[in-house]
Every structure is written in C-alpha cells, then in structure tokens.
Image (tube, rainbow, N blue to C red; front, side, top):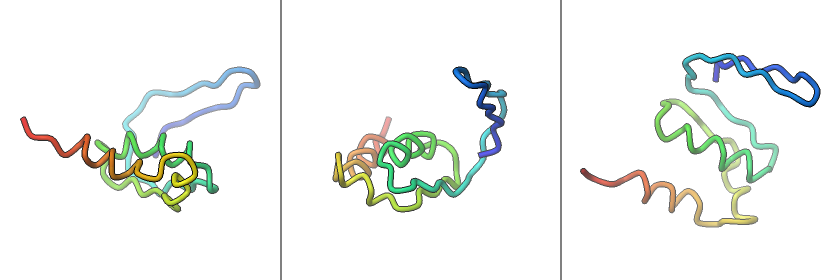
Length: 73
C-alpha cells in the first residue's frame, strides 16, 4: 500500500504517507482479510486475496461491511 513499516524487534515504526491500492495476500488468515478490508472502504484498488478465509469466524463479514458502508446521508 506504499506505507513504509519497519520491524524494530519489540516495536514497529510506521512512516506516515498516502496509501494506495494493493493486492493483499491473506495467507488464509481471517484477521488479515478483515483488517485490510477496512481501509479498502476508502482506498481504491485494495483487493483482498482469498476473502473466503473469513468464513472461519464471521461468514457474513463482507456482507455486513457492505451494508455498513452503503448508507445514504
């Protein structure tokens, strides 16, 4: 997503920036899919690989997320 992050052992340093679209590999981890779906609401081009991995814990996650983001003023 274009944001620099460094592993400093027990700490992590994240350099501010403007994120952009990216393909997110979930490695079949529902937490990764769910976490990166949130910025995907406002950042065009975020593609979650294997979103079905969320079925383990929250089968309707993407349906619920869509409902929450499809509101009108």
